[in-house]
Image (cartoon, rainbow, N blue to C red; front, side, top):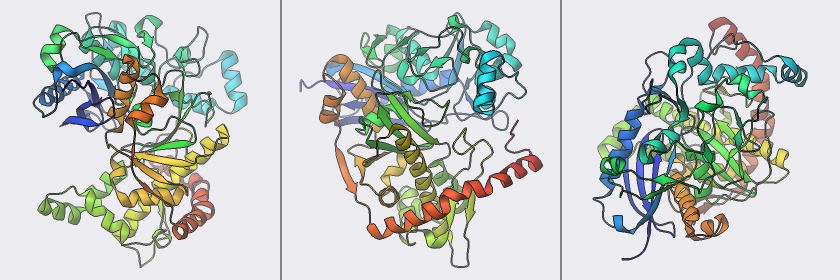
Length: 520
């Protein structure tokens, strides 16, 4: 009864979860509140009131205290992990000036003046001018400064959602370095705000005094205030330790702290991450994000619309599965494994390029989704399997790029995120990558990663190698099927890798004709 407990709060895109772990990584209790993470007042916009996120945290925490096994007096501390890149403007009284701009927001700021001087010349000579222009157009701060200058003028602090919640919980205006995956003047190599004169101050012009102080993951941020304790039920004075973004926490929660073990995140955005202690850019000017481990890097390749495609398929083509799932009282996605297993590896030649949303450099801002190879034998099941295979191909391409740059081969993968609950998707991952694919012992890998930051910060575990050994376990492992692997290798090398190059000029033509996506 005296065993200590660790509280982790995970505010993601689809839900807010309050989780209690033991120092051994066992999930003692979980409270989950579904949320509507954003609303769209204009096409392509995604916003939400900051107070909405705070109330979701309060609701999830309050529900937790009624659950068996949870003992407030046993809590040693807590940590919070959130969705990345959602930004908030606070005034000098700590009040939001406008809705938070959500990470899925697609508004852009066209016609920005290019960076000049020596930086501009360097970008022109290196062929990176378009990349920098794209980064500037995507940066939320440039949109706010142009279209809502009065908001920017009143902004006292410009922060991420994580920093806002740190403030609401402790009263401290402090951000964790582990959350820095955003359009701000941050030096990803040195893991601090950029030095004076860096080009990022011109690309994303934010006055230095409007940025928050940064601390490393595992650092003490503060203690919960009386007001926050009343709202959440978290004991007053309980220490809050810095964690990292949900993706960064997910990587260490899956046990991927060495560069030869990759973390595949089968979430709304699908990613492949490897942890490094050396700074490596898989794509020039696209930096590795800070790891949830201090002074380490998370080398990431991102597929913006990853397992979101499963939700898209369910909405557009899964009416029958939705009806059957409703009758049986089970999640619709459980029935999709039957679709996958009814079709052979390779989907009888149906190949899907999963670029339902464009990327920055992989593949590029002009990219679109594509399916080729249709014949009269193909059904909905073939389309669905090709969708999962297409995500696998895209992540394998990212893995090969990462390995080439780091010169460290990937020998195994751990799979986290909602899609990891599909055994069929796990087997496809093993077959496409040609290495064992394992599931962590808990689906709540992001929350577990935050609890690991907390455990190391508290000194329960001396370092992250110990934390992984004590808190992470493999639930099951899927070995590659040699026959399927051979089929996937051929399709990947001879077809998938050539699709984008063959279709790229057509994507530009589509944009010229329809204006979507805008390529200014």
